[in-house]
Image 1 (cartoon, rainbow, N blue to C red):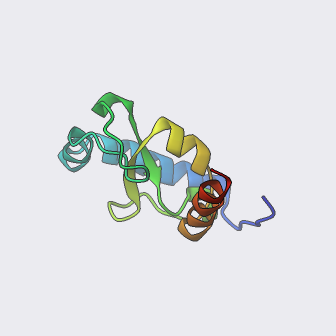
Image 2 (image 1 turned 90 degrees about the vertical axis):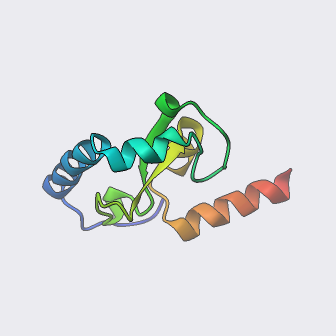
Length: 98
């Protein structure tokens, strides 16, 4: 992708542990019970929603309630390690191609 990161593997491992803990909280269960993908807005069964870091861990993001959103697997797989601005640009390019 051409981006560099100063995030070390230990930090990513710690943040993934925090994300696992967040997924067990009622806060997360309430978020996925709505069954709506944060990115595409489609209705999805709660079990098919994944936890996505808006600012990816590899780009310095943290596992906090403000940085974690429910995403369908398709959006999460497409977004990968893109920052919000990069994701928006990607979606705009898709719209122009359609």
